Length: 149
Length: 141
Image (tube, rainbow over all chains, first blue to last red; front, side, top):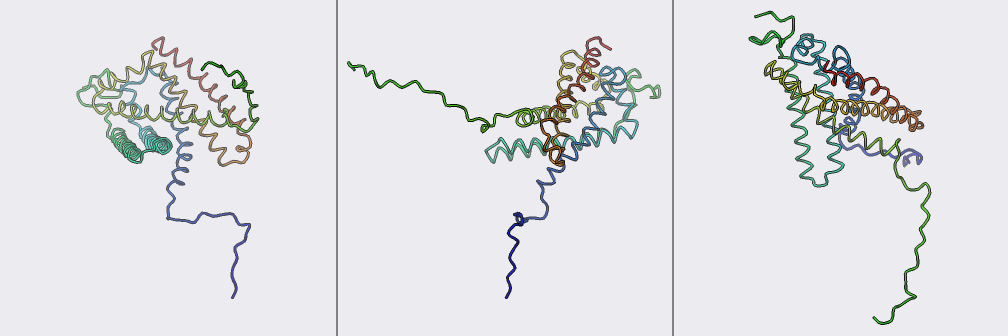
């Protein structure tokens, strides 16, 4: 009868408990989304605050001009999803680090999840149901391409 | 309590020499970059909550959106935007540094250099943004 003896120099491997290692994928998500967010947010800030007249150009007509183009609708929606999940997950890490009471931590994490979910849904609906030329709006407040009513 | 003990006075305690190099006090490559990453992250998170809500006002009416976004153009909010962009730029560059340290052996062995690169990139970014933004905010165009 032969007994297989494990190589004594083999590194310790933690026994796998479940299937999906959610914390590992959270760790990876923070890095992958972080790289994409650097591009999306720097682009967002450059177009809105550096080009044109900077912060003074931002009004309803400016948003109307951007969101009549699917490119910016998708840019902002992807930015919204990635940033909101990235931020909520980061806040979850901070709750795990500093909140000692289990019940308080649970309430905070439910609040983080709820606020992230609500704002993601709200923001996505706003970006894709947006009408740059709402009926009856004053012509001087909307984009110049809107038909004069 | 008539006789004052004179010989039981505590001897002047000699200060122990600090253990050299064994006590972690934090430096820019470690503790402080970690603390700053947390503080800027939390600040950006709460701004994001507000920013999604103020942008959602475009679905209410053009006048409602313009009224609220108009407050972003005041001098106090202009200074706040400098702080916000500063926090975002730091969080972005330091996050990229963390990724390099995690995945790249060279990054792990050159953490100190990478931290100074983060600071340099932050200074360059702010040098490009702050004058342009503040001139715009304070001259009104």
